[in-house]
Length: 187
Image 1 (tube, rainbow, N blue to C red):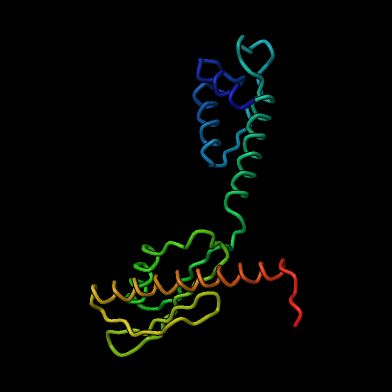
Image 2 (spheres, rainbow, N blue to C red):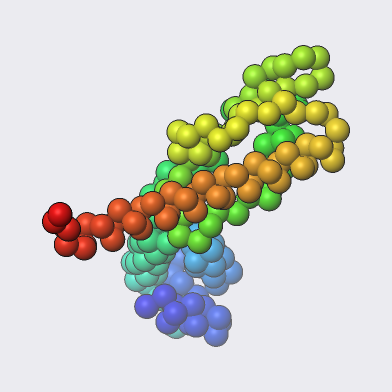
């Protein structure tokens, strides 16, 4: 229905009460994921031009598009809390570290349910103590230096530690699932 409406509009058709451009813009906005709703103004039956679609049919097509698009987005994304990376830093130094971590971090394939927290405690003047936690397991706590190269090296180390912890969690999970399927051994 949507493709029929879109091809109709692209061929130069109009929608009753809407201009061709407004109707086409509404369809394009909705297909891009933005939510836009507009009720067509009422027109007397004599003013309808030939070759126009009734506003009710257009509204129904747009409603179907929204419903299908939101269903596909929910399936693609999964639960909203899957794969959280939390910034619990205080200072600019901590935020810079978090940015470096976040830009370089890629979760391993198949890792969708994890929580990574980067927390910070103020340290001496000009430094901070940063801790990395993955799924409530403290991986390390390290003082940060304000030097960019050293901070980048620590961020790369944090990314490697987080990825290895997530891989270990996957491995243990697979072993537990395989153990449930295998018959119990008797001794």
